[in-house]
Image 1 (tube, helix red, strand yellow):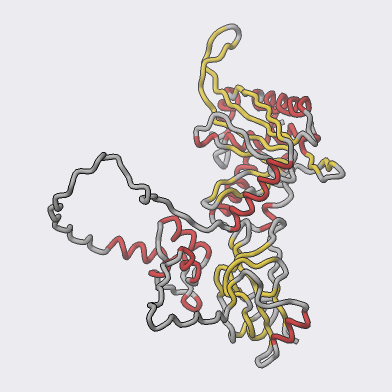
Image 2 (cartoon, rainbow, N blue to C red):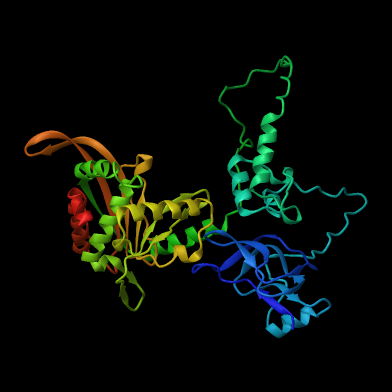
Length: 425
C-alpha cells in the first residue's frame, strides 16, 4: 500500500510548515532517510526526510504554507493508485491555500488584449534549488540565486557554489565609466525639497514563518500576561577583576554573559517561584533550571536553551552558548535545543544598550534584560569613585510572581555578581 506523507510537526510551536523547495521530483526512487524537500518552520529551515522506500508517486503541494497533518506527498510502487491511498488515509489533496504542483494554465487573453507580463516576484528565488545555508549566504550579500550554477544533486546550489560565484564576480574587470551627457535644461522646481505625492518609496516583503510565530507568541505574552518590571543597578567591579584573572588561565575566554547566566542559575535555585510557569488552572514550579539565551538572527530571534545551567561551570557555559549561538545564526538548531526553557536572559549589553525591558518568553514567568557595563561616578565609602555599573530589568508575570518575590531574586543576583567568588564555590 502506498504511504501518504503528511506535514509533520517539526517544533513544539509549529502550526504550519512552508515548503521552500522539493529536492526529489515525481517519479524519483527514494530510500528511507533521503531528503524529499526543504521545509521552513517557525524556527528554522529543515530537511524533510523520506520515511519509506519506493517511488515518489505524487507531490500534493509544490510550495507555500501547509497546515500540520495535511497531505504533501505519496510514496509507493510504480503504478499504484495514489489517489486511493490518500482517500484511505483520510487526507485531502491539494491543501487549500498552498500552490498545487499541477496548476491550471491561465485562460488565453482575447486577441485584441495583449497578455500581461507578470513582474518578477521576490518569491522567485525560493523556487531555485538551493541548500538553506546557500540561501542564507545569498540573502546576506543580496545575491540572486537564479544566476548561480549549482553543483549539487540535481543542480542544487550549495555553499561552495555561492562562494565560487562571488569570487568569479570579484575577478571580472570593472565596466568602463560612462561618458556623462550634459543634462537638458529644465524649468526650476518650486523647491529643491519638494516631492510629488505619488513618489512614495518603500519596499514590501512577505512575512516569514519565524516572524509570524514571533509576532503571535509575543503578542499573546504581552497582552495575555500582566507584565511588571523591576530594575536594579549592579556594581560589576569585582566581576570585571575576576574575569581578567580567570581568562589568564581558563581554556576559553569567559564572557560577562557567562557570569550573568551562572549567577541567575544560583538565584533561581534560591527563589524557585521565579523558575515557574502559568498553566491556566495551575502554576508549575520547575525543579530543573533550563535557561534560554536570546540570540538575534536575520529573521528575528531564536532562544536556544542551556539545560541544567546551575550544574555547569563558567567554561562549560561559555562553550555551550557559543555552540548554540553559532547554530542559531546558521539556522541549524534542532527543535529539542529550543524547548524546555524555565527562565530566559536577553542581553543587549554588547550593543551599548544601557537599559531596556523584554517581553516574557512563554512558558516562563520571568525574563531578565541585561544592559551594558558603564563606567560612571559612584559613591563608595563616602568618596566619589569610578564604578563599573550594569543595569538589569526583570520582567515578571504578575499571575505567578509578586513584586516582593521578584525583588528578592534581584537582591540575590546583585549580591552574587558583586561578590562573584561565590560562583566558584
